[in-house]
Image (cartoon, rainbow, N blue to C red; front, top):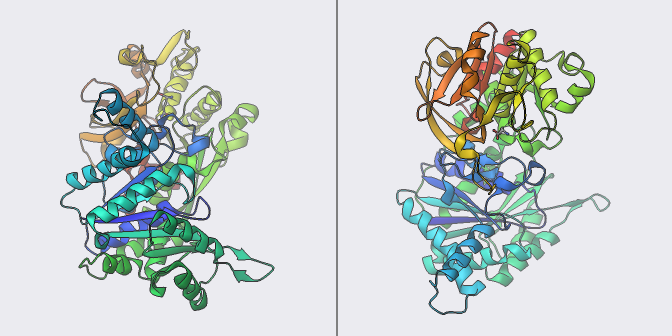
Length: 534
Ligand code: GLN
């Protein structure tokens, strides 16, 4: 097995995740099999309990693991299908060490950061290695910035690990920033030198340095970085700001042949990549012939990362239709203040994404009503499906006080309610209905057509509340179509309105299953319907 470790230096938000994902893309195109994973130094056991304002979107895997949004990049940029073992935080590491200590597993030893904590990290690498024997390369991104106190133990563990498996099987890639000092008109390499010096202090010598820069990285600067950082000049790679889309990142990194450098460093045999399909996808993104506008009505709207996979899914579906998607980000509370017509009166389609808590829900309900009444394409995801159900119950079925018990425990008509198994839950971590499950799609529905007449689908979930089966008859009587239910418990998975060009609510999260050239059918359907409505 070969290993790539991607660390970051100088500042955060350098696009380390995109760099790791892009290396994955390029290596796959060289015919290699890869796995990607992330080690995060924070103390939360997983990001499931973090606010989107803190951490951006929580990305959910098939097995229900709640993970960092970088895992979304990994799954979109490659063919990997990740699991909970591919996401490790300090919180998990310490939780295990303390559990072992209490269980007496350390046989009387003083439990220490080294070796016990570092062993725990190395154990994870070994476990992933064991499970992926047919893989060529495991790419691990280390969250945070070199020099942070909290990342130190991960780096120490990697240093030990490299020694144990042999340095020839490991490629350390350090992603850094080359700032431009405008007054001097120069790119500065010193922060990079110092950050690499920090790594070397720990005993890690990077093999490749990826330099994030807004400017041209000339030979002189490459030579300087090479000399001060003790790497070959050809292993100093530029990673420019991409102009249009993040899907250009692999193409940009390919200019300096990073995939070849990695392959050579690890002694792998691989072929030159044929990126024509990827390039074709990027070309379609960059030069679309049509445009459509979709309002995303949410509450974390000022933070791009909070709805990452939603935005990516819209872009990917747009490319399939040769269409640029103009995403209009709407704060649901603005609709509460000014009404739907004023705020979303001129968009071609409306999407209400997932969310938690009451704030903004009445604005979202107004958005769903506006979409239904004016025949504007609507896609509701998770909370957006629950919102559409409440709206339908109130305004079509005459249940004026209908609500979800999440927002009003005493509501007269709990059309969205807690399932029995959710009722006594006290611990908030990893206790929702999580991960992939199979559901049946009924013939004759729009969803059935969109899914290519598949009668069984597998989609990922992350929610506590459900469509209340006690109201199913009443809502169906009013004209709501139940298009899909889960195979195990018959929980409502998709609702539709038949007498509407496109009105779909999904209890699951289709945004976690879009990839370049493979848009999710529900997103693709929304874009097609929005184009019709322009
Ligand atoms: N808050 C809702 C629930 O827990 C919806 C969750 C979501 O949109 N992910 O059921």
